[in-house]
Length: 131
Image 1 (cartoon, rainbow, N blue to C red):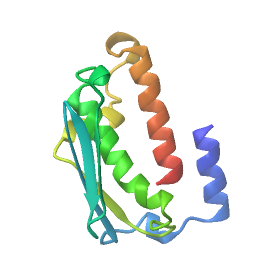
Image 2 (cartoon, rainbow, N blue to C red; image 1 turned 90 degrees about the vertical axis):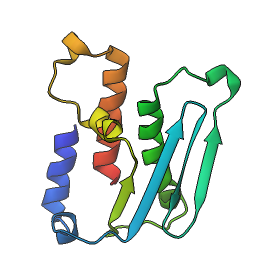
Image 3 (tube, one colour; image 1 turned 30 degrees about the horizontal axis):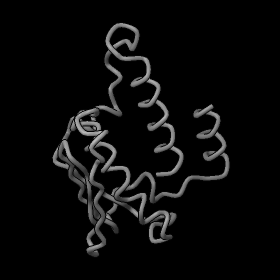
């Protein structure tokens, strides 16, 4: 399904901005801790979310870091401030949150929780289609 999407995009033409090095036009930073997560953009728009007591310590900090790195640019997408051709850079202090999405060097059946693997695949598909 994802490959058919890419083939349709290629048939319609690919903007060279997607394959050439560009200086980011939007820069995002995000952070998390066991009690919450948040982030901001280079214009100063910030957000934070404190986890309710019943959700504390139910997710790893790596997962919270990963979610924060997705939510931070997503806010600008929702507000219409990030459009086609824009180049965004979403940074966090956790390389493992980025690695969590790209984890392809192990067989899922041998090493992964099936639910985590399904979520990771879906997040990667959504990123590929929208970013």
